[in-house]
Image (cartoon, rainbow, N blue to C red; front, side, top):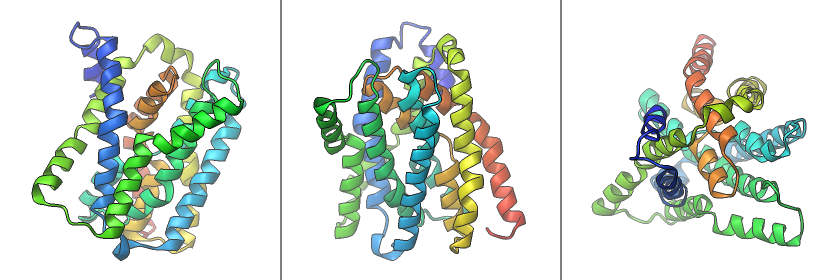
Length: 297
């Protein structure tokens, strides 16, 4: 789909203006509805495990600070926010649900991962992208803008709405469920097409080194560092695979959508999504094979 977007951008059918509008649609409408769907359909009380949610939160927080610290080694300050979020934000909602459903026939444990990690992911991303916007300065106005961005962020609102729907046990009429499902299904293809249309290979080559570094953190380093801890606290089977999704799945498309929507160029974000998506086919398979050999899944 990224290749399709890249090729269509070479034609009059998908110019820069259309690509930007598509990106805004994904960020402000499709992705929030997708996250709402994943959480609203989960049986909150049946799957709730406070220890696992806390573990996901703490590990995600540590990952954010590791990436933020590493970002200060970059010479180009304008890339720091994109580098940080591309290294810690995983594709749980997109890849996680499909993977767990194909292996185990259920996405139950994914709700715990979404609750423990995704709200923090987005609060941190909004804060970093606002405070580190190119040409911006850290002052009272910027801080207020960051707080307002958190409170009005569409993805965060989608998460809150989905959690409340699940907590209250509200029913979903068939017509509503189908409409939400169909709308949510547009997030991945449109997000990838918009991303592909925005890829500039010359610019991407210019930030190849930081892209490879944050991609290595995303696919290898965090898994190697934190997955053994998940095993130690008793995670097995589908819950352990859900942990693997949190730690080692590709950088989510929303990184690019959010970066572009908040005044960043998005080149590093799009490159990270592309590289981690391609190489995750090998790294993710290797991690699953290792867990299977160790009889943990």
